[in-house]
Image 1 (tube, one colour):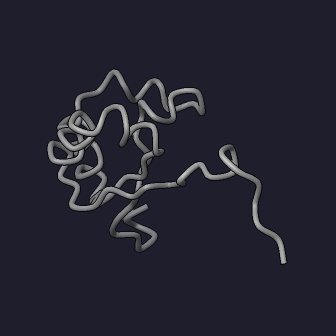
Image 2: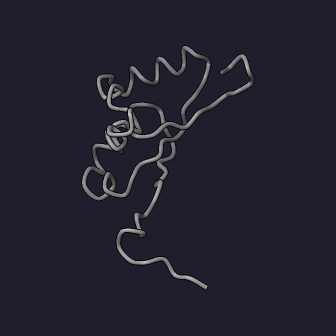
Amino acid sequence: MAALGYQSMEMCSPPGYEDSGFGPLMKLKAKEMKQIINRCRLICPSSHYNISEFREHLDERITFALESGQTQMILSSFDLSRRRPLMTG
């Protein structure tokens, strides 16, 4: 990717997206992921998380972000569609 001109990437939180195919990444420690990304001449300043991760595992996710060198934590969705119908026109 770096050879194509990319300098950074955003990933998702492996535990929050385990059922979407990111479960194998949970075997790696945050610092290991950072090393792999850096060896590819990229940085990963942010990851996106789902709302339940912030509600139920915030301290753990902050630790993951810090240990992997991230400076931003992105909330991917407020999950509003399950709580109430969308407003129309």
